[in-house]
Length: 463
Image (cartoon, one colour):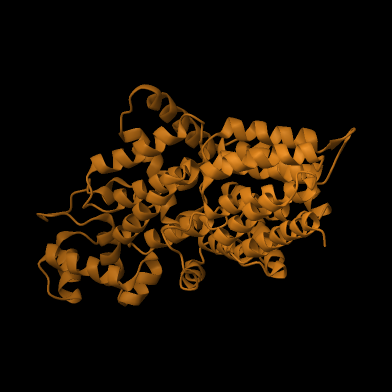
């Protein structure tokens, strides 16, 4: 082959190698091969260069480097547009929309999705890939807590990408539908969407799609009360604090929720703090908001932590969320956040945003009555919100009052349940039950369960 043709062929081969590396979770190699492709391909090879540029941006995105991905997506969009590759241009715009939302720029994400939607119009008709843009708009609406608008956009968008067999769009849509249905209290709908995602992901044989889908299925199980299934899922994963790809984020958040459910607040806080270090370095604002909120709940559940620490954590979430108007993460974290918003005072713009959030909580409770299965399965939706859980309740004649959790353990002890039985009932670990038992014995000056229960009855703690 002539040297120029050989170079171009090597460039096209590098595009393929980049794609294969990305599918195998080898993002540094994917980035390296995409960069090599762009160096080798002549400017006249516009379609191949469009693929390489979009693959380069996606490699940075999947690696979690959002700041770099932001810039490389914009370059990819320009290359695709110049090449007249409409499909790849719209794909890059939809992925760019996701990066912008992850970076906390909801308005910019909305604009990017609208631009993609405009490019996906063909006369009065919409191309199937327009569905991906609609899903992006639906995600923005969800973050702003406009659930009715989000539902219309997500359902229409998912239908379009499914008809067009646009895999990335379908997976993004199913992920969003799971979250929406859980917010609406429709656990059955969430379960159905998650099951479809799992079937499709396994059919793809792509590891990160499978991890993403299975994590969402575990989330639905957790929120519907099957905590044992979520615990089994935890034992199958290998998360590291530097896992910041968007396909791994649902797994990270669920992992932290499961730690909370087990009463492992210190482990949860330590892991979350490590994870936040990586997120902050790459501008993962949306996920940082969620982690600050979960940490706030953890702090409110453990009496060893002062109210100032809770305020600091919640204040960090408010400061990140207020500029763009992220409402839904607060509602999805649940009642402890509402209680703390009421109890604390906030200054300046945060005061106005806190008032917005409280109004959203009130509307959400009015429109969607309490669903016990959520509170039982996910302690971030309820536990830690009661005053007694934060040491506000005094017990009869005790120098140091029992915490609400210790009261719950004591009541179950009185029924004769084993440590394992108590752990299963309260969705905590056996070591945590033993820790609470030790605290109960100390506060009641008892040396055994029988003695503790007897003292509790004498003190009126079991009335």
